[in-house]
Image: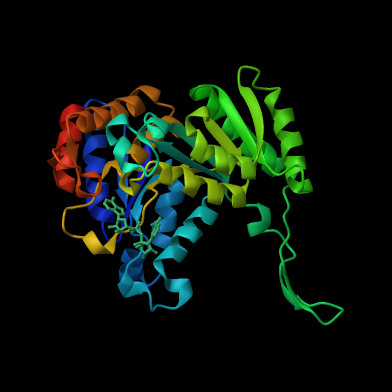
Length: 354
Ligand code: NAD
């Protein structure tokens, strides 16, 4: 297992260090893992003058999976746009052909008070949102702003999905559902938008290959409402780029704690980029205060989705649960009466629980 490790900026190096300690436990027990480090974002700009330099491209292309911290920082905000850290993220996603974005929203019962929703609505929540990442109205052509024949200015975009694009994301979603509770909800707006009526038709066709998965369909406006009303009804949700953008942010906030949220982006060969959903948190960088759990859970996703090692992934997740149940909390999830720990102390506890 060749893993490219990109610590990035801000808290990136601190949280990646803890994820690596957890993976080292498995490596010491005999799991065949090789880590190769490379810079991305501001760190790469400082070293190579570009946010996704050739040095990093080569390492990422040769790796089976990429583990990323976070990129960005105020010192880079005045750079020309193509040189900014965030451009490195867009470039790596494009370079590796990452079309499937997996965003779990998991709320451990111990953290139910962190959500803005009532604990009984969200405690035990475990949803996976599968978002198509490279198509839809975000990339459709033609697009632009113009003055029409009546002399009126207008803006326009094209919502479009091809059959292969829908098929491949549907397969990813069904395969993930097979590894979970075998329930998949496809989100569309088929009553109004032909693109998503087409989406629904293809998803129904792909479903024939997964008879064990219970498939349902929901309009996106209703899905937005149901996520707040009764989120525990969902297991896996699959949707296009724009709906997924909005719903995955909504779902992640059900949990209330950004330091806990992992994510993955996969390509057709299951190669994946694994990273926490949060940014580089410059306000707490270098202070050993960050919550490393989102990154550690991203490493667990890597073992599950790229390396098909369910047992190792579950073992990491169980170690996290055990540490939370024992009352250890970093500042972002701290509550009165709990044991407040630093980033590296959280790492110590999770390694010990492994
Ligand atoms: P952010 O996610 O970095 O921080 C938002 C707030 O959450 C901050 O108060 C921060 O301290 C806190 N926070 C985030 N992660 C935490 C963790 N693990 N533990 C404890 N607290 C945590 O978002 P932002 O402040 O909007 O952006 C900061 C920088 O990160 C910007 O340069 C932005 O462009 C970049 N960014 C990068 C990514 C990425 O690398 N994928 C994503 C979002 C933002």
